[in-house]
Image (tube, rainbow, N blue to C red; front, side):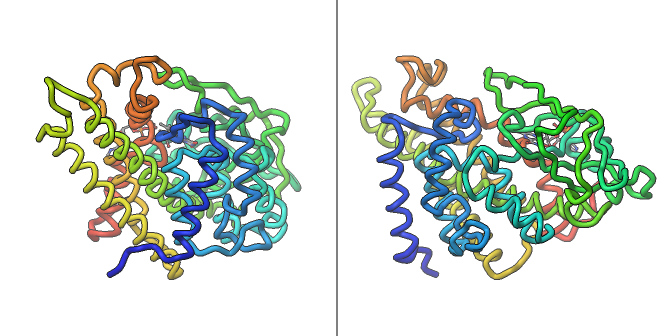
Amino acid sequence: MNFELGEKEQALRDEIGQFAKEELPAGWVGASVLDQECRDWEIEKSIAKKLAQKGWLVMSWPKEYGGRDASLLEQTVYEMEIGYWGIPGAFMGISGTQWVGPCLMLFGTEEQKKKYLPLIASGEPDGVWCTAYSEPNAGSDLANLQTRAVRDGNEYVINGQKVWTSAAHRSRWCWLMARTDPSALKKHRGLSLFIVDMKSPGVTVSPLLNYYGRHHFNEVFFDNVRIPASNLVGEENRGWYLLMQALVFERRSLAPMTYGGFKRVLEQLVQYVKETQYEGRPLSQSPVIRRKLADMAIELETLKLFAYQLTWRLSQGDIPGYESSRNKVASDDLVRRIAIAAAEILGAYSQVDPDSKWARLNGIVQSSYLGFPGQAIAAGTAEVEKSIIGQFKLGLPKSY
Ligand SMILES: Cc1cc2nc3c(=O)[nH]c(=O)nc-3n(C[C@H](O)[C@H](O)[C@H](O)COP(=O)(O)OP(=O)(O)OC[C@H]3O[C@@H](n4cnc5c(N)ncnc54)[C@H](O)[C@@H]3O)c2cc1C
């Protein structure tokens, strides 16, 4: 089997590389997309608009919704290049471009598609979404969520609290999961998905700083927030099934960007060990260092193939059962192992702030190291993903 890219995809890759060289500030690196989004919001906004103008932001969407009917393979190549160059802007609207938009295309009303899809495709701040599933007592056990949505005439009234809501402070729209039937026999059967305008009266966003001081996620409170009934997505009480699809889209999106970002980290490390001397010899001659780098190369190659395989399945119109969970676990493991091994190679230089004069490789190792625990939790922990793989790949019964 030949895994080389075709001419069209190679041309796209070159064009994105050229774009990165022209548009990004000198020395720009961004292995950790999470970190990057917090660092410079102005660059995020300006590059998002340019990505949209290029027709890249949602390239595989139909033209009528702001895409350019590109193939899923082209989109995957784009995502890998975004990761490689650390191009900002794509992450600012990741909820919208990667799962809200695709879900609306599958389950939304015509009115919802016409209103929200072009907004997402525009790359404007008014098209930025956050995703509000998790609550203080509902993470892995998401079906336990308590936020209520009660129908009142032509509206729903929302009350409750969400937590860990990424980018809520940047978002105009919220993709919200709430309980509509508290008496349902099974918890997951009483849930529904809604679109909430974050400017609605009664919405309060409260920042949560992560352990290295970045403002990435938030608490969001809903106090008698009224939304039109037409903001229900799909059928009432069937939200769980839409959520499963949304999570497949979300988990799928991680591998290509991770692959691209950490391919660059590996390239930089290879350069570093060639140029750095230890006891009079280049680090690159050390068998220990060489084995670490070879392990990284193997894992990267595996992740790339996983990403292509899933893209291929989706392009055949299949709904993948377990592959997006597999790719999520593989991405998270790769990020963790590369971050730790890279920190070991850099030694004390990996222990300073990325902005320090003593930082190496533009701080790419530090931000990867700080970011990997969060990445492994967001969108489902390894335990949850492996449980899905057990059920859908191995045919094990549901876990308790
Ligand atoms: C950087 C970041 C961004 C996030 N962004 C968002 C967002 O935008 N929107 C949103 O809704 N949420 C977001 N989250 C929340 C995330 O989805 C949850 O943190 C995650 O689902 C885990 O839930 P929890 O934190 O409640 O942990 P818990 O569910 O309490 O899990 C704690 C530990 O127990 C393990 N565990 C739990 N249940 C089982 C089981 N049945 N079997 C085996 N092990 C189990 C878990 O794997 C984990 O190791 C984000 C989290 C992070 C870190």
